Image (cartoon, rainbow, N blue to C red; front, side, top):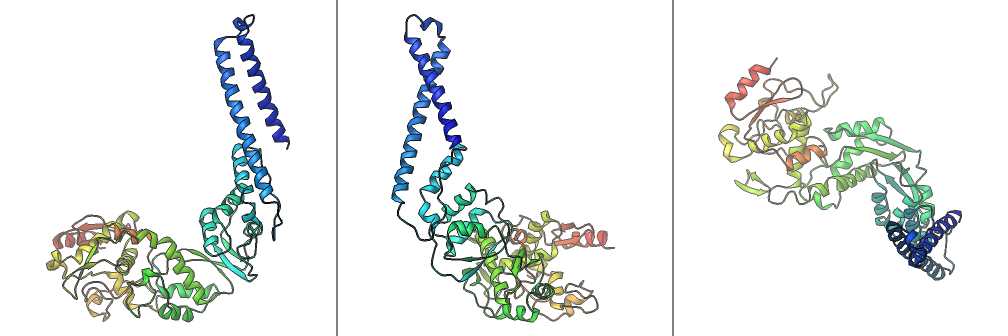
Length: 433
């Protein structure tokens, strides 16, 4: 109220002084004492002041009308939200919220059952509010977002797991979102890990048994439309999006897999939607081109993920593998990807090295008997060899335009690329220790 009184005094004083100057400027005895610039400035002040007074009067009137309309008792009503005059932004925010007082105090439902709601790392208040509305926890996500911003709660929103209820008002939800559950475990899934590595990490963190997790990704059924390109019986390898997750200590393999797929749906699906249109891949089975699928992209991206060290080289490496599958280069490549990481994937875990990724030894390109050995089989392997990150996925969708068919590790993380076998052999001789 003190801020309102101060505003009123300042406006009234400025408006009154300007009005006096205008009157004096019209009186013959004093008009010579009033310079033109002061006369003009006073007119502007009177005009602006008059508009401001009328605007404030209209807004206050609207507030009074709104208050009268909402005067009837509300179920579960929260604290009344009054107009704020601390700043213009605060005033209009409070006016908007006061006009939506009913939604602030109205629970989205009457179900008292707790619902686990997870705020992901990096999520904004806008994204959280939209998901709360989508999950049926608030009646209007935009009102909740503005309420959080008005109270400064959007800045302190922390990633975590929260127990919410549909019968909570927005006031109660906002308070609950400031106190995340401490009964959570943070797990970071690195890019380029295969499912067995993820399963091992989850078990090490005490969340789920690795065998149960692997069984879930091999048999779990989901209805996401972007899984339609996955062959029947294929696992979810490639769709377990690498990221930092927070899981409740009391979780299940199904919960973990669903979180990863939800993250894929949020992060990857929108980025790939529309980018597949017009892209084709040569199909060995039909001897003709067919549309590129998301599953094709993940297979290639998983190989790029295991090959690339430098981010700038991802699109170039992607172009090499796409070129190797182009019939125009059949004489050079025989339509084989000839990728070392696919052989490493086929070899699997080595107890001696305690690693899932062991260097390909001389001759293993011919000796390892597996459909994943792309030195022996043509075209794409049956599925992704790891779970790629966004950069590798986008590299396959937007590859560099090159005629490269070969690349050789230089030793510092970079590669020497070449378009002919002769040049590649020279690079091998130059950079092989």
